[in-house]
Length: 331
Image 1 (cartoon, rainbow, N blue to C red):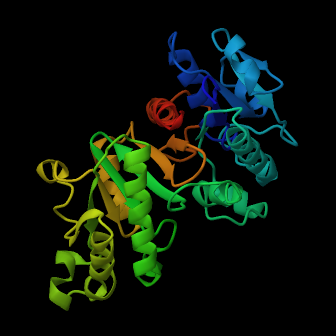
Image 2 (cartoon, rainbow, N blue to C red):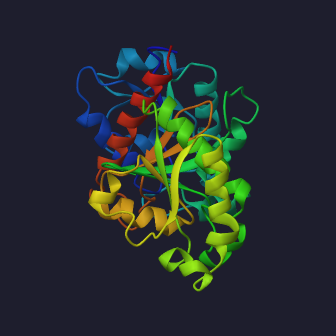
């Protein structure tokens, strides 16, 4: 819905989520899209910014200039910064679910999630590997035109990367790679570059799994048996994708000019170059869903929570990215 606020989830209240949300609100300027937070009042107010309870996202615009609008969904017990509490797990999950529903219903224009602790959520019975998969399940019933996600994208500067495997131990990633999984990831990536980033003819690169792209099978055969067949299938569909290409040279500045996004094979292959390029300002985006979702490219940082050290750069970038994509999707 045009004019609807962004929906922000508080994340783990013992982490830096409340601080970066408060800092982002303080840094906002007239004309910036308003946001409404779904979370616990006391946890957010403890970050030092004024907070006003609102009954729904519709109330955000009227108070955003003076205070952070909050849909108050209280915790079962107070949580202290830096002291994660598994009792908070169900509330954290409910904030995400309620904010996602607000986006599906048009009451919010996009979803921006503050960091969560997977350990805290799993200890409370949460069965999803992370935000990305949870939001994918929450939106599975909604209509969507095109290849379905969720697919994780990380973006920093002129670099965009997506992941064929996500939250897996490194030892399990090669066995999880399939032609079908890689082609789906690439299709969602190409579709999002057109729909969400306004790139009419996207160019993709596929990162190899093994050193030297497998060296013709001498350093691994996944390029021969999985990656190259996936690239050929995508090319036959009309998707412009090069590779598999050696990952050790794929992220150099000159080479980055030859593509719009890289499909990576495992978590650190994608995240290391993004964080090296812009450690503070990277953004995590979830592609291929009927809701726009972004988040900062960092974790809960329990070790610095409540100490005034957290930087809001990535969260501010995530707000801007969400607003930009929502604007492109809005008729």
